[in-house]
Length: 544
Image: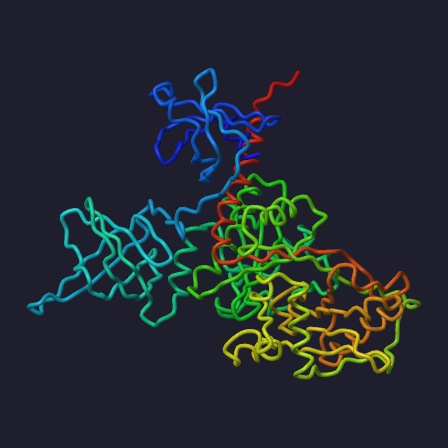
């Protein structure tokens, strides 16, 4: 698809080999032979004919995203360069974080310092672009802050918002200066908020809107119909928690209509959950809204400076949109950077004749130290390493608080308890029983039980699997937690048709590393660029 679009749009590019660096244009792509033809911009390839064939790459921009297409290049009879059967196509992230251009003089930087003589100096400049940890401004003939010194500074955003920080000169050239910024209190949350406010001007915190307006959006989007647990509470509407726990934003259109919502919530010590994505169709800004929300959850986890950082999210694999924007992204990256994990999800059906009573011969007991070692070994058989790292599945982290500090875990009841499943006196598997505040997720996703049966447990008949699920429900009921999310690896639990809990779907979960999140920004821009180009082409196609 990428090669086809490059040739259709006749993208200008660079041909780079060990011997050449030439400006070219993508002329045509033959999908049957997998050959990309290139034309020179200026000089001819004829004088370079003795240099071919060559290994190298074509560097092209498509929808603002840079791609490197590698392989072997050769000349054809017509003097064009052919790339035969490209060996690699990579998206190239040019910067760790994008700079946001400031066009309206709404952001300024004030810096003050003392000279050797003891006299004070103070400068104020209009910021021309902003990054999560720095700013660039024009100095002209005005004062220039001294180098190699940490200075006190104030980042002024509009009339009311100020961020007190330290500034260090990073570079100076052509009448411009760049400084690195860090908050005086050691936290980068305020700088992160300032950056994302400039990057996403149409997004605003959920707490700043009325519950009536929010409920209208979620009802029209269909989100409230996803599960019986989707009943917003006053705490959910208020979203009064710290941004280090969860950031929840809505997209407001230029005509003041709410079109979408997304949350990014701390799920584990190093991993954030992107969730509660609700959008409306049919508005002129619907596509713009979706693009902003998808990029938002790729940006926020990277802004707080922790290493390593992960994002994970769950999606419906039967929906083409989810396949295009989540499942297909995994093909863009290495398995060490993003992975797809599949789960069978079970939901309750409340018909009276399907009720399964708990049985004394099926119960959950605390996992022993020996059990925990077996749990970790089983995890490594079932899950990719990226999932094990993101979900804190080392033996030392299996039981206990899932977010830190512990006081925060207590406040939001975010813990994990490993239970062994016992049936008729025999251990047939284990459950990772996680808890979390219902106010953080309408889907109740933080109250999740992951069931892993061993080989003996998998072989049991459906009625026994149903009894295991009922025992898990009973555990959460004793915790006064309703409608937990119960999942298991695909095709390991079969409850049949007579159970109260039945298979609802095989859902997908994508896990991103911090590096993959930066690539996902470009992936989203490319996907939406494709959609816009396709619609533009369709609009220009004459109707017979």
